Image 1 (tube, rainbow over the protein chains, first blue to last red):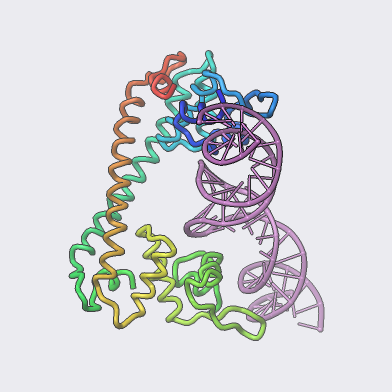
Image 2: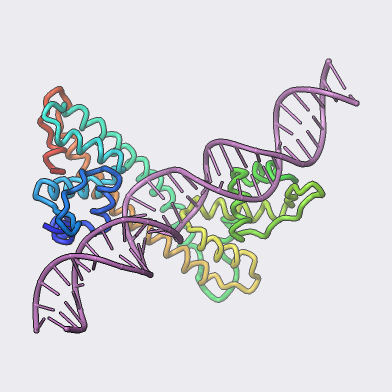
Length: 127
Length: 127
DNA sequence: TCTTGACCTTCTAGTTACTGGAAAGATTAG
DNA sequence: CTAATCTTTCCAGTAACTAGAAGGTCAAGA
């Protein structure tokens, strides 16, 4: 499988697939005589794992940990749960943040006439 | 007012205050004989305006626009409202995203025992 | 007067996770 | 045979700062 086939199978851009090997997140693939990268199904599975982890917002370093656990027969689910719980808390923190931003901004936007005149509660609030 | 006084008054780190002048977001301040930056109240007010705008998540470029409108007697509130509404929609989009991430991840975390055994629905889901 | 500590300056480089583009070689379809 | 579509490497850019180094300045206390 060359890199574009692997990229399609994994659902990641070619550049990203290369990048993940560059930073050692996945093992560097073998090469053809001409230097083309050869990917196999196992590598693609790891790339998919990383893509899904990234979609949850795990950092690259967390993906590295998770991938390690994925491949570790002796892992404990508590290690996985710890990482996932941490991410969940971050998400909840971000949600609270966004909620208060939303409420404030929505209020300002609603109270702004949005006409040709300069008076504006949004500007008043910021200034 | 030297930079640290301005920084305190504006609620921004010294480095950030310098940075905002470097990128031309605010006018470069005048200098003392020794080359120290001198800030006045008007500059501090602009820095506060930028800090508040940034806290709402407006990009630097949007802050530049908003600051322009702030200082423009001939602005129309519709211009301000357009920028703010755009940001509000982004926030709402992000909220929807986070909500679905949250629900999925919370479900997985709940269903993971978190014990010494390797079985883990989180890993199963990602792999 | 000297020194010490807290300022200030500029400059470079690092952060996160890619992404774009250039230059050049390989492969494939027609 | 050629044109299009791969592939490679390498360099640079993104956003918005932030860290740190090397060195100049200033005010207060001994």
